[in-house]
Length: 288
Ligand SMILES: CN(C)C(=N)NCCC[C@H](N)C(=O)O
Image 1 (cartoon, helix red, strand yellow):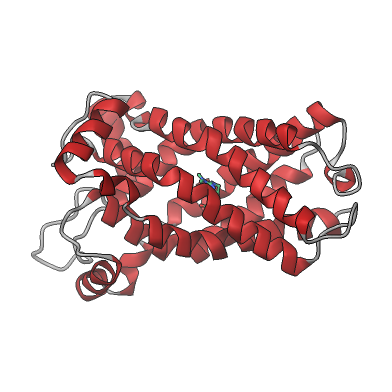
Image 2 (cartoon, rainbow, N blue to C red):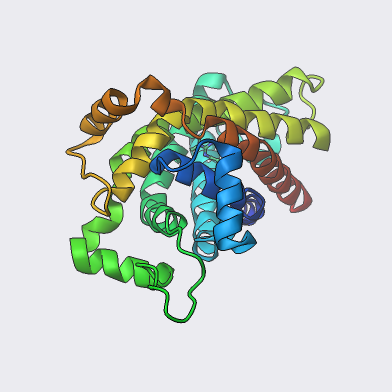
């Protein structure tokens, strides 16, 4: 099994994450809290209350974990395509796989990565939702002191399976949307590249960016549900399942709730995925 795809996925995921984390914090807060009037209000309040550091809450953990998860996504995707089409990554521009194969490989990558991502994503969302300013003498400490304390507390309160809270919604979110992600990327690259040639850097950047936007646009409704289920129990209500969360969120807040965070997510998705794909393609082509 070729391992370069895993390593390239690892490095490209870490770069994308640093770039996108401040946007991600605003998105998570908009999706799970009702105190903000919109993106700007959330940004201003976060900055005033928590300084610039507020935007980077929960980042140290994903920087290691998202890199692992991205490595699983790209590694599983590429190796599934290899199994389906018997072409390696280097041969794929000259002998392009069908979009059906790309979609199946993307869905497989999405399904596997969802289970690797679930505990890390839960911890990230819980930490991002702590709106307390940095600890000052006399002020009450935040519920979680950091990622490890958060993981230990969840295990203590809910058992080890507690770390997988929201995992089903995450799987439903990621399986089809990762298929869409890779199909969009391939389609855009092929549209703007002469037949059977490797796409240039500008094409990869633009195709990666739009693949990110397209997949997140489809993923947003389940992203909202996933984030709410992950916060369940902590002053937030506990849902009986994905359907219960969907129905009661829509009843209480209207259908618009499913698109909460869409604008900020799209603004985040373009640079994050442009950099991710460019780094991934660059690393694989320089390793030959
Ligand atoms: C719609 N979904 C779930 C995705 N397109 N996921 C893959 C993108 C990964 C990238 N690190 C990001 O966070 O955008």
